[in-house]
Image (cartoon, rainbow over all chains, first blue to last red; front, side, top):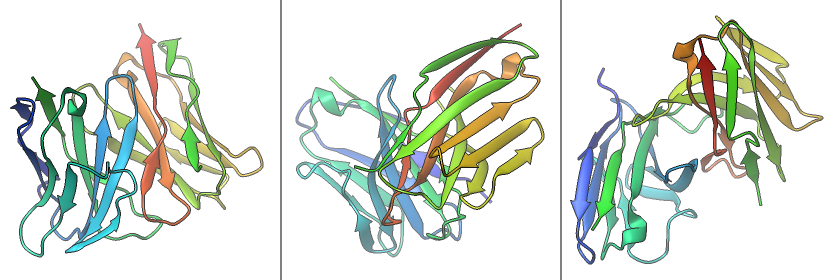
Length: 115
Length: 112
């Protein structure tokens, strides 16, 4: 059973371009979380999705950021018109359900650099 | 607002000693807490989960406690080794149960 797959591992974008980060959860997992991590900081929650539904997007900036988890295919975190401040590591995690005793499985992250 | 806090950003100990990391939660009562290990350039890896009605849980050299009175969890690594050097994250569900939130982590360095 492959783990959570994120691609690309590294992404360089010029200011104003769009960044698309992909996350394929573990097989059988229908819950996906996205986090952002800056150096010397912890994981900051962005959004929680189930198949075709956004459950909680309270940690995601209202502008330029969007996320989806379609019925088929990976979850996508999209950042439009990137700025230097968007440079960070973005991690995706998946779990089989939302039960309290469910651990999250993380991918290796996408490191976004905006130049 | 609901918070999970790890007040020690860094902890340096000698090999063989016991490392103790602290996690505090404020403004809510999580039903459980989870501990993860993160190595540089890698994603976090799950270590242990403890429920609020469990006082203590062990796994090999790891031990976690949950004190609802102090609103605190302690994470212990006994007989620490240089290979234990990493950042350790404490996390739990928010009150609504819709997000898994984390503290900033404690970076442990074990010197030989």
